[in-house]
Every structure is written in structure tokens, then in C-alpha cells.
Length: 158
Image (cartoon, rainbow, N blue to C red):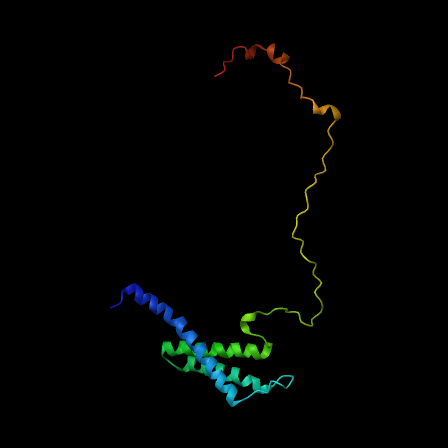
């Protein structure tokens, strides 16, 4: 008997596992399709036969997802459809899906952006110059005006 927490964890992991199983199954099915409908790699240019594998995988996955009522089989069919999309990206862009887009402006003008400067210039403030005799001690304020005032004689310092 399994605990309720373990059962919940296994239920949550079941959906991604079934989708990954569908992706792997779609890749195996794609290899079989490649054997049935071979694409000549030596021919330059676009070949319509190269779209057969992505179209079949995408149609089979989407069709099974729509027509089947079982939730688990729908997850596997979703994985097959995902493998069809990945195969289509490989055919159209001539790149792997996980390798990123790379240079997106191939053949479309030039890159006119200026490079980023990652250093900060030293701050040099424009301050007025001090007079020459300012190097001596500053003058102490005069207390003559305060000493003659009677208001401060009664003040106590705490």
C-alpha cells in the first residue's frame, strides 16, 4: 500500500512521463517513416518529401488527441504531435529545435547597432577652486555677541 502523498506525487509525474514517452515514440515512428519515404540528402533545395514525416506525426498526434477519450492516451498522442512539430522545425529551419534561433537577420540588411560599453567613466566633478589661504585652520566663530546677552546667563546645561 502506498501513502497518499506518494500516490499524489506519482499522479503528478504521470502526465510529463506520458508526454515524454509520446515524444520518444514519435521519434521512433519518424525513423520508420524515413525508411519508407527516403529523402535524398544530396539534392540541393527544398524537397516536398521532407515534409511527409512532420505532417504524418502531427496529424496522428492531433487526431488521436481529438478522437480518443482516455486521458493517458491523449498525453502520449500529445507527445507524438510534439515530435512532429520538432521534426517540422528541423525540416523548415534546417536547425535543431533546442539549438536556438541564432542569427535572426540572415540576409535582411546589416546590423547597425553600436556595441555596448560596459565600463563606467571616472567621475570628474567641475568644482570651483578654493583660495590659497584656505589650507589653514578655519576661523572660530566669535562669542562676543553671545557673552553680552543676559538671556544665556541663566541657562543650565544638563
